[in-house]
Length: 115
Image (cartoon, rainbow, N blue to C red; front, side, top):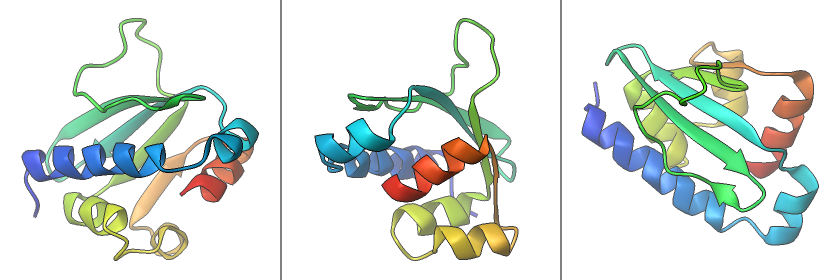
């Protein structure tokens, strides 16, 4: 099991990877959304925000407005690190039940094009 700090580092890496996505692709596929990433084996939830300018850094503080996230991911700590490092394929992880995503169908299609 990875630590909370290792998960924070993986999410920071994800933010950096997202910054590498071209502005044109972001303009086509990004809609502003709040994101939560629940890591049940560590009992922690990280919160972020996806928007046209990029992906904001994740924090452990829920949004001030108290609304639930638009896109909710649930993933084990080791799988989060493997996914960000490119060692775990998102589609296979979803089909295998290792990653759960609660989002609208449209959001899933958009995310698929960006990840």
